[in-house]
Length: 358
Image (cartoon, rainbow, N blue to C red; front, side, top):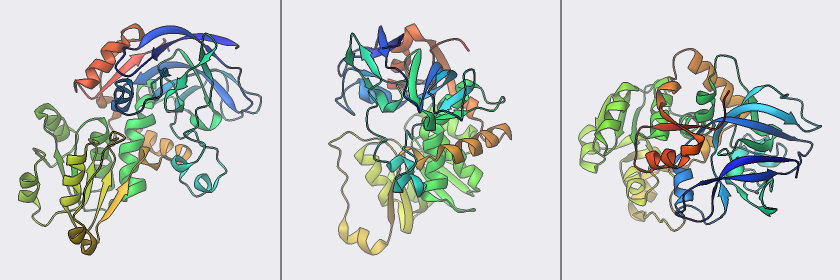
């Protein structure tokens, strides 16, 4: 082991993250050692830490990260020490049929744990292949994106998941048409990025449903034309026959089923939220089959890092994606448990954990 660092380790579902000394493996030829500066707290981090999403422990979580390149492997050419980088979630190989057809999130190597983190010589799971709740982390060169000077590290961090997922759902998955009417279930980090993506795509009417009144108010500030309680009656009052595009970002069977029901005949519903492993959604087959609705799954917006990050950064620079307004608080690394608690109780939209100083 060549490098030691501090990382927040979750030993079992429901355990608090504890900052401990861990070891990092020697860099492979195509890997990059990144000093992590900012990592956003995502709901999937909390769900994993709580033992709801996965049962792989002990784990170093954190997957919305940005930082500074420390060292690079011998074959790395796209970044160099000192570069400010965002970390993409794709972790793809770059040469399989999925990667070469523009679907890197389906790459078979993406979910393989890289085996780069250890504690007392024993392996740790590198959460989502990133392990951003650590002062240093190792990722493949393909997962690092050099940042323009105008992009703050906090913004680059949330682009890694919340923005890539929300905007990718709009542009890469559903392909929302100009002038469309759209319904969005959930106004958290993902839902608000879906909302901004629909606005950029030119949707004429954007209806956002969330049980939290504060999040409904936020949705209006981000460009929603209508905000409602997440009930079928409320949706039907706006579009009796349903919506051509519907997005669900909560990750629970009930809103998923509601999203499908309120999609119009021939419409497209995109399911984004990360459900529990045993979650099941039910369809009325006789209603669904002749309706010709499309149900699409969305994994991190089918992000294509080299294509999408640049586009999102340029939209941010142009003032069309106010991504900085999604960041509603920050905590020091030693207070990471507080950051997870804020997400768990839906306080704000995105809390940034300050891992190290820029």
